[in-house]
Image (cartoon, rainbow over all chains, first blue to last red; front, side, top):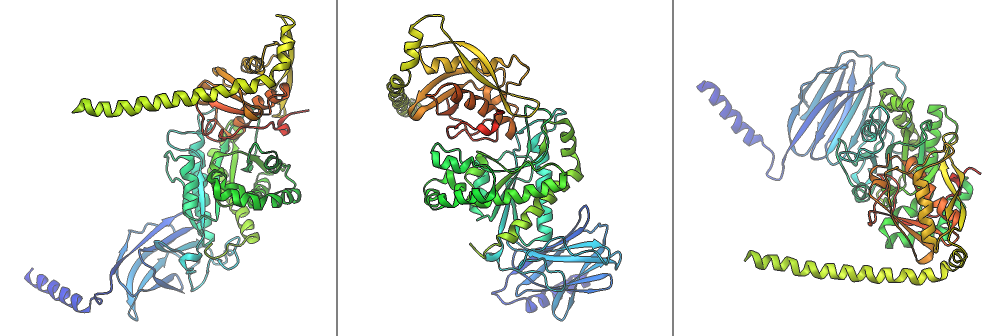
Length: 386
Length: 192
């Protein structure tokens, strides 16, 4: 016992001597492994930025971590389909996290996020697995030894807004399904697929069943300088047979005749753009004055985004092109970036109510929105730090 | 001490109430002035006879195509556009006689209809209009434009419609469509 105490004292002294200079701080690094439907994600999180480098040997992936700070290393217990164990070690004065996989037949995909710093590594089974379905130029998820470390200023935010929540249930299906309960899982799936494939930060207006005012949803997007705002809903109609997915963007519903002509324009894109261009300068000034009209300056991009998402939804569901629609949605009006509202399907239609509860359908809707989003980002690449 | 505090609360409270009263009183004072110009034709028309009626077109929802279909109805002719608009909305709440859908909660009660500047009809419903609404973007759009398209179709004095619920402005009908601004007719929802 006494021996052990002495040993600890020596260790402590050694620790003090070897401890970092006063200017340094101790940073906690947490490692966590989670299984998802078709991949396993390892997340390494730290309150300050770390330099990371990945090397692979057989069934082991080593993550070399470099930091000016001293690190306190934490790992949550691992229980995963693909990963057998994770363990910290040291090599060349660096901390190394060894990730041991159950098989050497795997592919991985690494990317980072900031504030807090996160390195995420997604593992998939199968050597020859295809690269992630889509990539965005300049911000492609780095696949090999270099995780994408983008400067925080360059990381853009996408805000996902699962409709309703808490005491505000939204539309109700015949079997009692509530809109708020299907918008959340679709939104979470969309968040996962964006984070998996693109280096964007995703902010959710809610991530659990809670009431959030429409104003604060828009404010959250504006305060985060969001690049895109996507609101997810499930439709309700008096006509029980109404079916299909629809993507909306804001109609201004203003009393002014000119603005009205812009707002209710039939959706031929060329004409729409012509009309919008004529209004845009005016709208830009308006935007500064009327916060509740913030969206009016982004109608053109929003209609484009809606069109691209709707195209994917049509392809996915094999429905006739219902076109994009406009309506004066309160939640879109105050958002100061391109913003759309996706009605995944009709809760008022019993068949679609069942589909909305189906995880695969939810996944497909999330994927369609994601694909539309990627196509939009190709057309309008983000400019670093707007 | 508590009494003084109570007084501190009551005095500004009363002042506010008085201010609000005058504010609304003044506002309402404007409406009749507008009305004089607008309601001249109906007035002379109704003067001819007590039992005069007029035929109006109501829009109801079709379960076939999801569009608004016209249905004719005879309502008593009234002295002013508000009066007739009131009868028309009550008919909409009562529902269709040809199997179309009335996209208004049957519990809805119409509190009042009045005209303000710019051909805007203000339609004030009881709270059931919004609270009993089934919610959903399409359902909310249908409800709003069943009213707006019916009113603007029949009364040339009504150019747009603004909704109040229980006398107050309301953010959305029931979670989706904003009621912050007056609505112009939307012909694309009409089957014709």
